[in-house]
Image (cartoon, rainbow, N blue to C red):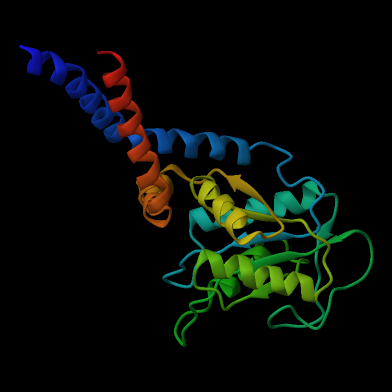
Length: 240
């Protein structure tokens, strides 16, 4: 009887801890959604000196609906900053220099993975932008293969060009929270802007982002989960 009485609160505390542990991915998902909402609000890029649009795979060398949404968001962000798109004097990565006149807001398109048969993401993005805004030329960063490289190489390019930070980085809404986490971890001068993407593009994307976040910050999540179990166990013991 005494053993059963002693084990009762412990069992309840343990069960509660395990329940909270099972619910932990849900808590992380809600946090990501809250950050997503904040990063998609108008004015997220206020007072930025340049705009960067993150690329994504272009299997056929053609910009798809989701990447087009990012590019439209990048152009809209440039317009919201009260400037025109940066104009370059030549082709290639960044051209020969920015054209003077008016309030120029550099627009960087970043993404590599080019092959002989397929252009780099940045090149495909530049073609799309020129189709929408024929007068616009952009700064290209065509070497990055990961989001971290997108951020680091774009920062270096803008600093070389003398662009004043902070910079706005535009990406898909579901990708914005993880991008914000990377920006903070790398201590880069970016303000993240999330843009809505077509529903079919976002299907499964939030789950994928959750799994990536849980993996990349696994030790933080392990510690948080362990604390949940310990607190629940101590609460059970205190209830005796």
